[in-house]
Each structure stands twice: as C-alpha cells, then as structure tokens.
Image (tube, rainbow, N blue to C red; front, side):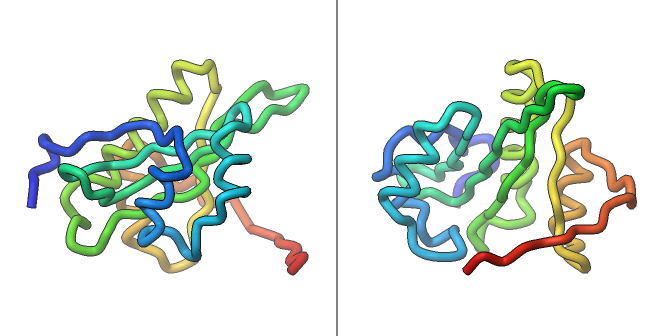
Length: 142
C-alpha cells in the first residue's frame, strides 16, 4: 500500500472515472446523474489514486447568494477503509479548499452527522473549525 506522498489526486472528468470509484459512494453511480454533475458549472469531484485504484474522493458544489458571493459546500468525502487514518481525507479536503480559493470563494463549509468524530477530526486537521452553530432541517422528497 502506497504512502500518502505517492498518491495522486485528480479531478474526475468522465463517467468511467466516477464509476471506478463506485465502491466509495453510498449507492450505485448513475450515468445520467454523473454526466449532469460533471458538466454542471460549479460542481467538482476529485479522486485519490493509489496506482490505478481509486481509494478516495471529495466532492464540492459552489453556492452563490446575492448578498454573500460564492462559497464552497464540501458535499461528500470518502476514503476506502484500508486507506483511512493516513492523511488521504485531509489531502482531498485541502485540494478542494485550494480550488475554492482559486475560484474566489469566500469560504467553505460541510455538514457532519452528529457523533461522526472521525469526520470532524479529518476536517479539523485540514484547517476547518466547528463553530457549533448549526441545526439541519431536511425535506425528503423520495
């Protein structure tokens, strides 16, 4: 298994690349949704590779508001079990952070499930802070 220094992080640009990372997603990759995500302005997906194997990903979506400007929503982060606790998640978050800065975002944010201390530790190690001010209200349309 490669060290963090030998991993490559590249932007996903094809359905085939995303499908190769399907084992990291919560469900099956859908071609139509993947094409829409990859071609939508402000949608970003980076994959971490150990050789030819996809071992992690981070996705982000730029959100724009008339009185605030643009910020990056870190939509999802995943790292394959055998590769966890090796800095890959942090490296992926930092790559999205760098892109957000390049694109002029004023900040970046992420929602974390209550009790997900591993995710919280990853985001903190990548420079994020928990401001303790959020409650999530959801609507389920399924």
